[in-house]
Image (cartoon, rainbow, N blue to C red):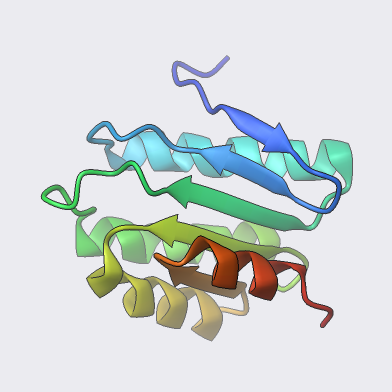
Length: 124
């Protein structure tokens, strides 16, 4: 059983995980990834939106944490799941995208929810 809560919304075409604005460590994000895998398997949904828009811009996630999580995400999902991350930390977008994509994931990050949803829901 997880020591963290991972609130989510199940939409017709995708799952949306709502990450509270608190300061989170690597353990939290590993647990979130596990919750994403389990719910994706359970529902059969292969599109995920991670909403981190409530994150404090003054508390970015450490680069090595992003790197390791990108590797784990690619290992867990590969190219079978499309993942969009809504975040206020624009300087970290390309790093996460580059690492995850280089390992075979289909990901995109932005601070523009509408564009992310458009990308998430497109075919291919």
